[in-house]
Image (cartoon, rainbow, N blue to C red):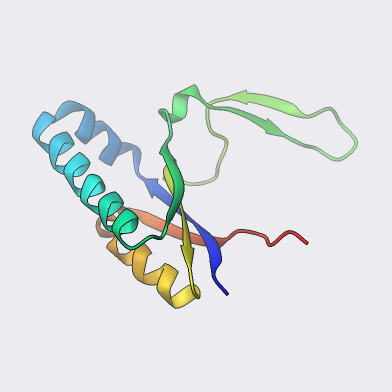
Length: 121
């Protein structure tokens, strides 16, 4: 039985800034993601995914026990990396999902998290 996995793509603000400023770098990265996406489609594994807008466009709600949630403009994380996008794939097992994650362009420069989608009864 196959399982759906989210492949979460994280990158540093510096990587994002360099891509925005360097058009050839931007074209190279887009081509790498296009090839990766096409490989997932050809293998019949892609179920969805999106590129997220820049982190400064985020709004984060932080819950505090016994208090009203606090709303922050922008991401609210104790990390130097930011979530840039995700793929939703279907794989037979974690090892297959890891193989696809290793092929993700972000695996060369950033961080890629693989997380199974919670099975619903």
